[in-house]
Image (cartoon, rainbow, N blue to C red; front, side, top):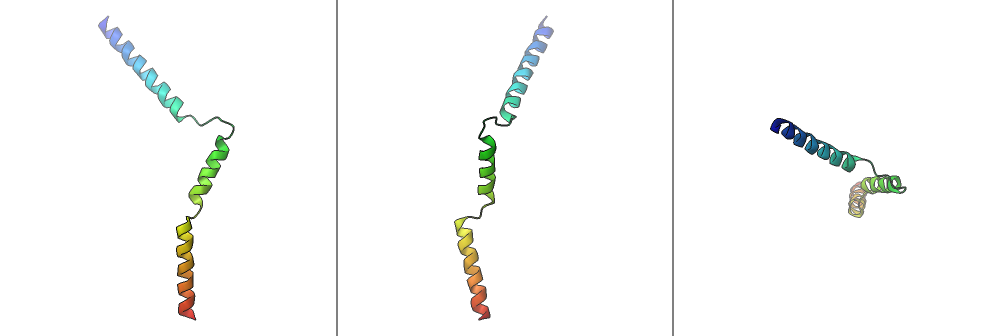
Length: 67
C-alpha cells in the first residue's frame, strides 16, 4: 500500500505543478491586453531622447568637418 500512496503523492504534485505552469503561461485575456502589448513593443523600438541628441551631435560634427 505504501508504494501506491507514494505514486499517488507524486501524481498529485505533478498535476499541481503542471496546472500552475499552464495558468502562469497562458496569454492575457483582458480586452486591452493586445493594445498594451502593442504599446510596450512601440516603446521598446522607439529611440531614447539621449540617442536622438547624440545622433544630432554626430551629424553636426560631420557637417562642420566638410565645411
